[in-house]
Length: 323
Image 1 (cartoon, rainbow, N blue to C red):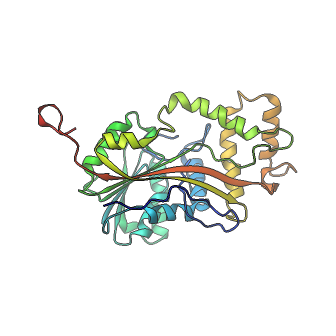
Image 2: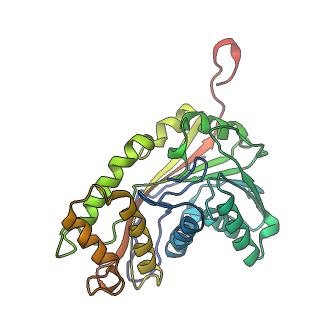
Image 3: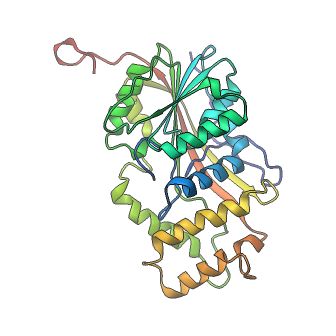
């Protein structure tokens, strides 16, 4: 069965709604393996990271929901797995979209799982969530036989993503769907020629951060389509999404930009020229007239790619064993 898949979607920065997204730097927005969100270089763990993940979810809530609505799910899934669930952005969206489903949420961070449990309780859905703390590179937990597996910004954290995709394939129920979401990296918060005292500053920060990620996260930015096919999946849809949300679209945009760039500073401060570092500090000072919070051109600009892959049967390997 095939499904018509729109290729791109654009967000109306004035409405705060639209088709598209997922972030988890989303995307997005790495952390420990098996988590699922990354927020640029220099990010922190524990409570601070949970805070930025929650801001990410608040800013991109409608986009996350629209991705979940888009998925070509067959039937009504009863069991869903969220691989690298973070603080629950995808888990809660999936629970809202499929009210009869239960979600097994997997992450390597106990702090993230605790936060997810708190949020699920606040929404009255804690009885529909099972949390599993696991590093997916070292041990594959018993996840049952889900009809849907969701992995947002988590595959590129794996040492062997191909093995993870094969494990997901074998865990899925026949005809089950694997939804993979990946980000293009750090969101862009200002136009390319901003700020006036250091044009292109945030792009230079982005490049510096990407250079640091290249060794530690070699699979970041991969095209997962060929790997999914090699693991036995049929890729039914691939969707490229462009998102732009201005301050009028979400009251959390300013806080999100500020907290993200504070973490970026921690990762690039030692490689930025002094003039750039000083300009970045002015952007990060809420009391400065140059603060990013005071700028009318502040927006969250990001890109996501989503793959929807159906479980198939892999060809038999040597000796008749399936791969």
